[in-house]
Length: 274
Ligand code: PXL
Image 1 (cartoon, rainbow, N blue to C red):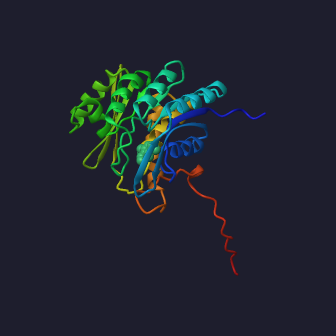
Image 2: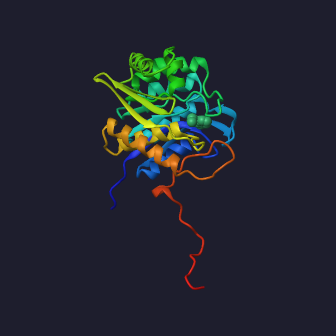
Image 3: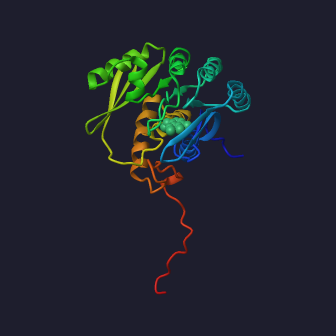
């Protein structure tokens, strides 16, 4: 019998265009050699051009999916993405509070197009109920500002925001920020902090990049890498997959999430001399 792959779970919303949300998470898990399970929290109506609607599933339906999946599969790591309303977040928080797998919380609040995916009460509940169960929280600059009330204007305020997020009970925090042409991600845990710096990539092919980063961290951690090494490798993965993305959709285009980074051509190969 074949050895079983690691299993990762995403608890997230659906992006029918396939570039963000649970679709991006599952593709990322698959590409990184991890079996993916997904609990759906909400449906968006969207494509690469924009989000037209967000419909939350009934919270009980989210809980029963969680119970079914976790009663059966041995989850090595999980992540949350868009969770929708306060009731769903409460249900997810009380469920994960009883589990022991590492949990990466991506506090998704708005889409790349600026569409709100979560309301103010839900943000409060996320911070109060879910963050204390997080092994790692991965807000971008905007999300970190909203969670902390700190204006992040440079490396010092970034560091300050990271520390303030740790006070919400998460074991560690990765705030993703960009200042001028530098991507500066600040990692903080109770032992100290570290910055990951890379030059900014100018690309419009970034739809779902936050989802892919947190999914890649989850997959790599599920595969046995340390959290720190998972973050390092996941950042490289995202950079490579933005750089190799192709022309899909008319708006903010998705990353390249194909296994091995390429598709298998079905065009007949050209024979020399014909
Ligand atoms: O990229 C954040 C995100 C996560 N999950 C869903 C989304 C989006 C952004 O649009 O739609 C379902």
